[in-house]
Amino acid sequence: MMPLALSESYLFGLPLVEIWFVVMFLTLAMFLWLDGSNFGIGVLFGLVDDEEIEESMLAAVAPLWDGTEVWLIVFGGAMFAVFPDVYAGLFSGNYMLMFLILGALIIRGVSPEFREQRHDETWQRVFGGLFVAGSVLAPFFLGMFTANWLVGSTDLFTVPGIVVGLAVVALATVEGAAFTNMKIEQPTGEITTYGTLAQVAYLVLAVTTVAYLYLFVAGMATKVMSEFSLALVGLTAVLGVAYIVMLRSGQALYAFVMAGVQTFGLVALVGYLLYPTIYPITGLTAQKAAVSELAMNLMTVVLAIFLPLVLMYFAVLYNAFRGPVQVGEGY
Image (cartoon, rainbow, N blue to C red; front, side, top):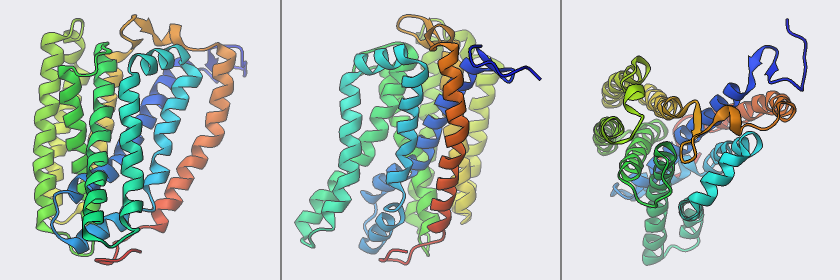
């Protein structure tokens, strides 16, 4: 065993830069899966025309979404701590998108609370609409941010940004449909139909994104056509079909897991297409962007202590609120 040396770029023989690169994207994937299902419920909230189901959907996610946003904070914190130059470049170069993401998250979070303050029909319709808007716009802008990061653009609207933004909204709806059918006592055919349509839309948008990267983004063709990338695309297609089968057969938990694997596959593809570069605008690599070896080692020790605690917290949280909610009621 290699001796512990906090001033070296390896800890217990492990390459720290690569570990932190993976950790950063894993936290993003966790956010897009767990909070993505909450976004998806918000999207479906605007499509369902049943007040009792709407109330049950809100009750199902109310205990969860404050916690799931922790993963987005951890993602930003990991980037700031280990790749500070990338953090500064991305957040300053995409400041408008950052404000839009933050605004959408705030609207998504507070609108259900305001909606419950009064039982006036117009009041509830307005804040219900704001809840839907925040739930659609937050994943859309996050997708735009991720795509612009990947292709090295600071423009607010780009073709890959819009396509990936729509793909993330579709994926969130896929997750939300499975989660909704898990949490209500009598899964509805309407939710299942929307989940199926969203899954088809996600697959189409994912293939469109890959084709665009291959055809129009310089330097991407080789990686896009690599065995790893093609395997991820193929796996996503298989999982998408399996998701539809499981959702339509009433196996919502399995469908939710398959939606999660698709989410991790999407984020894995982004990370793979980026690496070893981490900031395409300047060509900065992960190795050059990382902080000193001592700082990385200390951060790794902190991660090893606190990450298991965060995972335990989510295990307890989801266990405490497992099972369906009563129609028109909460837990």
